[in-house]
Amino acid sequence: MTAASAVPPAATVLVCVTCKSAEGPAGAALYNALEARLADEDIALRPVECLSVCKRPCTVALAAPGKWTYVVGDLSREANVEDIVTAARRYAAAPDGLVPWRERPLPFRKGVISRTPPLAPALTR
Image (cartoon, rainbow, N blue to C red):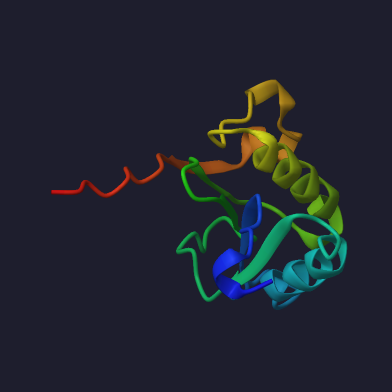
């Protein structure tokens, strides 16, 4: 399969790897835990240097072309890896990225920092 014909992942989880907690580099630890957990999923995992939510570490974003993007904070490697995987699966399955509130894991109900609409397709002239 060529790069041009490659099918993009159903969703991407962006993890702020610069998030820190009292114990140290919490964002990097969360990223490492998710790397193993998402290895066999149709969900990409990308480290990002900063999501600018330093008062609510650890922070992740769920994104995909044509879908709403969610930024969620107050997550940890110790407590939320499975919540992130569940949320990412449900997000990937939602055609527009809008996961009903009751179907979100609890940290994705309480920890939403922002929800950004998808970019409109470029207009042709």
